[in-house]
Image (tube, rainbow, N blue to C red; front, side, top):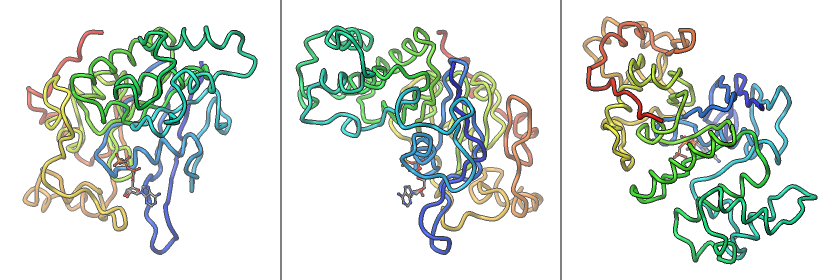
Length: 319
Ligand SMILES: Nc1ncnc2c1ncn2[C@@H]1O[C@H](COP(=O)(O)OP(=O)(O)OP(=O)(O)O)[C@@H](O)[C@H]1O
């Protein structure tokens, strides 16, 4: 079973002077036939990390490794995007798009396309249709089938339900979960919405301002978030509602050109200016992730964990 590993990955855009660091020293492992959910608000660096994994964006530091080796463009690692237009040619039928991604030497390509359509719960007739003739949910299913055609072991799914109606999101998420289990895929599942991430993930990583600020087994992160940013995301996510983007609080995300000193989250930390007066360390020293399986980059992670309001401790949905 393949394993995708981000090893201290840094991605910078632009020159040294004017540039910004979109991803800053990220360590993350996706493997073991599990779903790792990566959550964080817009601009936190999630897409940059995904694009770096498949070689669409060069890494400036560290490495992305698939089974210990640099990632090749095609084959065992596949990516599905928010906008199926990025993966589907509008002039190609669904069937042709899927067939194009089949490994060379595949026999009976037509039957294989039908099988793949079946896997994503679309009937064989859809093969003859153009992306524009399909609904958003159907297009995203075709994009998934196309990714599966290459027989991947790891899939990166970047905001694949974000453009869909809330009513459709659930069915696509169920499909993702189902496919991942049946095919023993490992998946990096990216969304700005913790309600969506929580629905499918075995493991959750929370990204803020280019860094993973909290990570751990989904149950543990959801029931006992240790980073105040994770708590904000949880509060915004609501119960099981698959919500529209809820921007977190009303404060601005960290300016990626000038991240604040110390903890990048400190200007927004709900511990607030009063408490922060005693928390000089937050303004001066960047916290490093602490913990074994469940870790958080907060100087007060242990104290924060005690402050979990009871209503945040949702059990996950049974699978
Ligand atoms: N090609 C680029 N050139 C310069 N800056 C970029 C580029 N792509 C992204 N950025 C910047 O890098 C930071 C991280 O962006 P990224 O798209 O990775 O975040 P994200 O969490 O995926 O957000 P979104 O969901 O909005 O895409 C942002 O500040 C963004 O403006």
